[in-house]
Every structure is written in C-alpha cells, then in structure tokens.
Image (cartoon, rainbow, N blue to C red; front, side):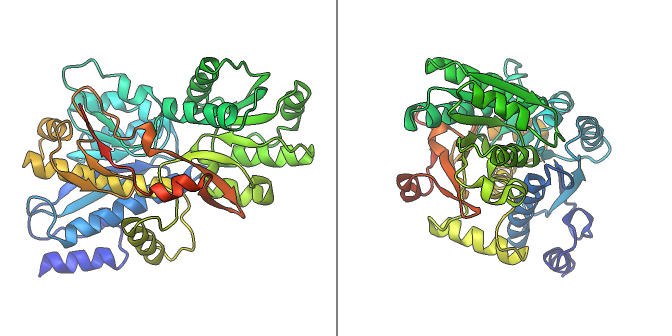
Length: 399
C-alpha cells in the first residue's frame, strides 16, 4: 500500500527525486541537464521523457522488485556545475547510473568521474564524438550514448546541402563552445569528402545579439547556403540577421534547429530550415502516437519543446532498465557488462533496439536511424515523404 501511495504521489506531479521511499530501497539514478537557460528546451524535454519511462516502470513494479528514484540536478549547461553534480552523484548520492547531460562541454568535464567510479553514464542528448571515444581503449568503458553524434550529423548536413540540394558555395556558422567548435571540425571534414571548401567560416560566442556583419561577409563571398552548428537562441540570431539583410539563402544545420526557442524567436524567419532528427513529432506508428499523446497530455502541452530530447530520454531509461534487469544487480560493473550485451528487443520510440551497444561500440544510434526534418509553418515535419513512410527504423546488430 505504501508503495502504491508513493507512486500515486509521483503521478500526481511531485518531483520524482523527492517522492517518499516506501517498501524496498529504491534504485537511485542520476539525471543531469540544463532545466533553465538557453539549453533548457532539450533539458526539460529529456527529463520529461525520463520521468515518463520511470513512472511506467515503477507502475509495473519497478526493477528487481525495487522502485526507481531519480536524483535530478540542473547543470545550467555549465561545465563546472556539471562536474560538481557528477561528484555528488558518483559519491554521496549513491546512484547506480546516471542519464545525462545535454551539452557536450558539460559531459566532457564529467566523464572521468563516472569512469573512475565505475558507474555507467548514458548520454541521450549531447553529441560530441569525444564523449564515447575518450575512454574507448580502456578495458572497461562506462560511457554510452543514444543520440546521433556530431560525425553522423555533420555528414548528413553536408550531404543535404551538397548532394541533395546541389549547393557548392557554402558558409559555415558555429559558436565557440566545445559543441560548436567540434561540430564545425566534423562539418568541414564532411564537406572536404564531398570536394567542397566553404567560402566563409564564421565563429561567434553564445549570447551574440547580431550577426548581420558576418552574414554579409558570407553573402559577398558568394555563399548559397548557410550551414550551422550552434544552439537555439543563436540560431534565431542567424535567421533574424539574415532576414534584416533580405537574404534568402537556406539554413541547414545540426539538430538544435528543431528547438522551440529557435522557432519562437525566429518565427517566420525559421521557415524552411532543415536539420537531422531521430524523432519527429508526428504519428508515424502506433508506438510513437501513444508516446506523443501521453507526453502532451501529461505535461499539458500543444507541442514538445524538443521532441528529439524527449524521445531519446525516454528510450535511455528503457535501455538502462533493461540492463539492470539483465545484470540482476545494481553493481556498476555488472550493469556496464549488460549494456554491452543486451538480450532481446527494447521497444523504444526512436527505435526498437536489438543489442544497441557492444564492448567496442557504445553508440546506439546509427546514420540509418536519422532523417531530415524541416520547419514548416512553425513546426518540425519530415523534409522528405519517404522518411515519413519509414516510421521507426530498428537498431539491430548484424555482426
């Protein structure tokens, strides 16, 4: 009865991290992301997806007969705060694993702590390639990811601009964070493979208020398309500055072009922007329809702030729960080993996963699972009809 009352309290809206423990000791799982600030659309959405999956799991009896308790921390997209919280979660908080964070710079500042503590970190949003490669040669590797990394995204952005839309003169705009700088490097490498050298490469700090000068330089250099690697507020600055110049060059960039803080700030200037997406908020399958309707109803929303973050957060919890069940333990080493050799199918909303990870590959998302989204009338939809018909592409190992 106490467990049911606790679960009902959670479902009624109490933050899961402070829901009272009842019955068996809960399994504590950390959740870190920016829940405030410019990156909050992905942080809030990721957390909402994780909470949904957690409530479903707890309602069915939890894992190993124990409820999940989420220990949530707002890192504000600040690497130093992220490290402080990682020290807490791997120390006195006694989590068995953590899901997070959302920003590449924050994750890179924390992964050594999880590696040293032998506590799995499952990254459902941040995309920097170094996140999963830094410790890849270690005998035991505790960092996993279920988002499309920057190598995948950069290649898709480059091919969209050069191969599918036949542009040869491109401008690259990126911020100076670890996310923007590393993403730019992968984008330049992808363009080089296609035989294209940008006519302009422009860098800017977060918080920039106007980019008309940089855009005018790109236009005068002959740029036909603007490729971006930055986050929502700065993407709006690019789109709005472009509009001031009355320049019609299309925008193609990494996935933050789908965030609501870009769409809301850029308004009609966001129209036509294209970006890689693992999940688009359209009812392309019964599984996705159920997820979308439940999510919107639960959080009283008309649209998700970041559908990709919500879906990947939801799937991350399902994957982690499956690993804990298979390990039959909350020991970090055993959970890591289970993640690397998961049995059976995990029906997520981004994908139905079959062995999403191996000992040598800690990336659950492949290029075949990513489609191009496009802003149309203020919402994200499929850029190509054939992608809409494909619905969920399964992650299945063939080797």
